[in-house]
Each structure stands twice: as C-alpha cells, then as structure tokens.
Length: 127
Image (cartoon, rainbow, N blue to C red; front, side):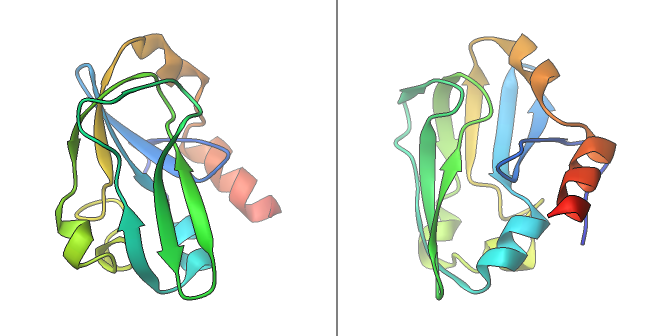
C-alpha cells in the first residue's frame, strides 16, 4: 500500500496535495483497495462552496458506496472530468490521475489539523 510522504491525510482516507492556496483531493490507496472495483464517481459541482467535513463526492464500487469528505473549506474550482468515463482511474492511480477535486482553500491553516504520512500509515495499520 502506498502512502506518499508529501501528502496530508484524513482519518476518513482522503488525501490532500497542497499547491499554494489550492488543495487537490482524492481517496487513498487504502480506500480504493477497500472499495475494490470503482464503477462510478459522482463529482461535486464546480463553484460550490464547501466546509471542512462536507460530502464532496460519492464513489460507487461493485460492493458498496462511499462518501468522500472535504478535508478543507473553500470553493470547488475544478473536478476530474475523466472520472465520469473512467472511474477505475482511481483504482489504478489514486494519488495521480485519480484525483477527484481541486478546492481553493478559504482557510489554509486547516491543513495543519490533517495527518502526516507517519500518522496516516499508523492509522491504516491499526484498522
């Protein structure tokens, strides 16, 4: 299982890559592995204002459906349109081409409350 060191993580298995005041959000390798074959992703609406903890997407797999929660507050400025036709990209490349949304952060300090690489790895090992 991959856990890139440069990312931040939530206890709900989302990852965040910070680029200036933009947070790129996706689900972790652990999450996609637990879900198994992803068949559909309901993406958020561009321009929507969200708060930390809001559901921003829904991922449907063969076995189950899971919500994706925003790790930060802000505005959805872009979604990964490729996932509409190829949701399995998340299974194949969760930290790269499988990103879900980009959020212009309203409060960048919220990143400090997220888990780092070591803390997330420990969380997953305990599950």
